[in-house]
Image 1 (tube, rainbow, N blue to C red):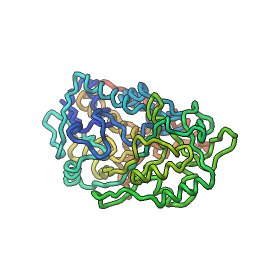
Image 2 (tube, rainbow, N blue to C red):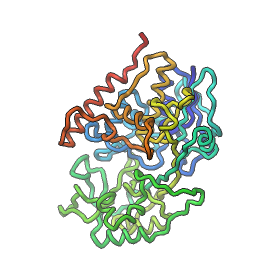
Image 3 (cartoon, helix red, strand yellow):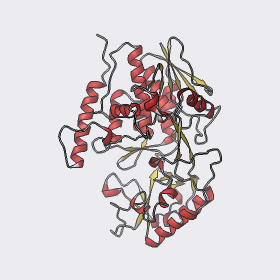
Image 4 (tube, one colour):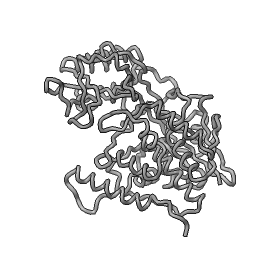
Length: 437
């Protein structure tokens, strides 16, 4: 048996590599470089388009951190690449995005069991008799394939995603900024751009008045809460940002005082020459972005290397379409993986590709089928995407979707630690590649 993987993003790369390293022949089909989505520009596999952060690295206090550990236990290529290309980011795992994608690309192109085909897939394929298919085309699935999936499976939904601007490090005015992580955690990797009360409210007013880019090709304008443009958040109240994206809690300037509001900058590459405006996803027109963000004192002379963009994300109504192992109901040699399944986030997307590959490998290699239960984040995400619910929305990893502990623990820190320890122990048992008896 062989496997065709469609899409070379995080999920597709993860799936292809896992299968190939188990001796399974893989054809990886990617439309780049012949065709790019509006948000992609690199020829490499595993391109990160929104942020260079893979979120928290804390295994015992954050569900996404725990998910990373579960993926490492399963042999994740994405986690291997992240470790090899990480940049300082306090308590978060952030990577040099170019080196990260290059690492993944080298692994895939250099593997003897992977054949790469550069072409656009226009329709949901019917697998050959000796073949499985994994569709991992992501939230920016090309129009022709997206329409075919919608026609054949139904329930295609849309929401919008936005990325933040990137500025050059040398253009930041450090006399108006200070370094440090919230509550002193980490090694002082963030650049903090403080605002006083007058500066903050002037910034909010400018955000609200700024001209937005038109989205002519889209009819619906649904915005997913997990990647809300900063101007939309600002419209919900003049203090919304300073209690959210720009909150100063846990940050103190050189004078020992807490600012009224703070915009944080995070390294985009290992050399620290470029910085991402954390949480500032936006759909403002490019000149407006420069004008508005330059109102922040530390960014008054900022050189913008990339402006924020907003683009369509597409996902299927997975509970109606997919089984727990990501295979299609009544078409079990076709599986979906990545954000198109309704998992949200880089790590979650990669995890779904890894899980889809694990389940297919078990079938091909005739191993006992592994079942990840809700004690693990992997199992909880599998349950979420396959369980019917009234209003299915994309889901990030979080402790709330895990099975509850048998006893109630009031202290949140202790509760999370116990959930994480239980998950790791469960993954040790459930993740083993057991041989057929």
